[in-house]
Length: 169
Image (cartoon, rainbow, N blue to C red):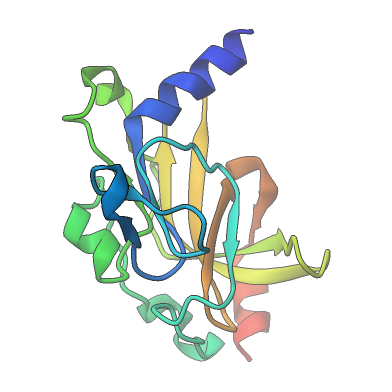
């Protein structure tokens, strides 16, 4: 029950841009139209999402993985979630209880192994954002083949320096 309450709290407090541009449904006071795959969520916690076809995040040559735009040392602005620099926007003005949300203490970007939910195969992704809450750590990433996604921190295994060297060869 404690976990459920935590997720309900996050449901109200987190704004996430997911696949492509937001779609707005004017019949519901500009609430997002979640009937399509293109949506912005202000009321739904999506701790896992997978958008391999998001054209706003093109394929990346692994040799230039460390040059993708990211934000380090702070939470991103809304504009940075719109321009592809970040995926997860935390609007602390919506609810003061989110004041504990902070960037995870790790220099980004990072390469990590992640099991693709579609193929069920482990692949290398570029982690571009990590947000830490009191009891939850959320990771935003880019696929090398294009697109993006988000999942729980425990779903990733970060590559060591020697693994990065081997992957980039």
